[in-house]
Length: 202
Image 1 (tube, rainbow, N blue to C red):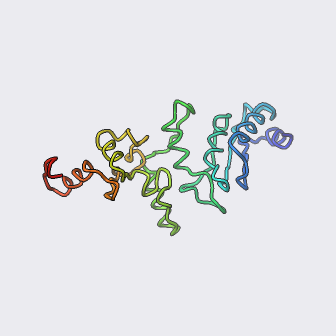
Image 2 (image 1 turned 180 degrees about the vertical axis):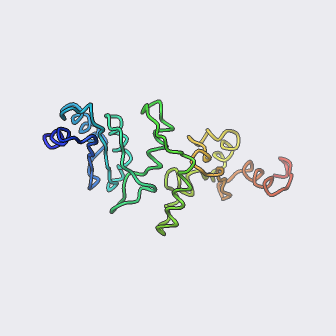
Image 3 (image 1 turned 90 degrees about the vertical axis):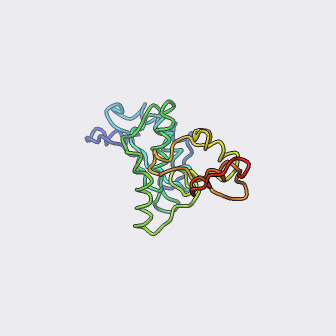
């Protein structure tokens, strides 16, 4: 507390609170930022920032807990890249704030349609692929194989997607043909291939 207060007295306008080894839990982060905002000298005159690592898989959750407690800056990285298990993932934070705007009360100025292209570009530059089940930008993020899910997505994408693929720069959802697929998705794929079959044929 004293060090941060002295930093403010010396002219600091941003106080960054790192969780360098990714040990903190969201409840602890919320309590810490709340306490700092209540006890640091002239806390209302500075921006509280957090830098959360992902060693326990809590980087994004801790960052969002900090926002709820009053932090107004998050240090994060595309695809969550970083030391050891990485950092809080930019695309996950941005889309959480966007899709849950009513809960957090904030939205970033980041152009979300560039999230997927940026993720792909970074993967090409670093040579590190994103795991298929990665939230927001993974190959399976908007993929559906189960017949009931495919049918629901074809009727109304919001049935199984809380955001549109287009909102993050992906062209469309991906209906994967597999052993769990149903006739509705099969019919859709057949139409995409230029064939016209009726329901009985399908």
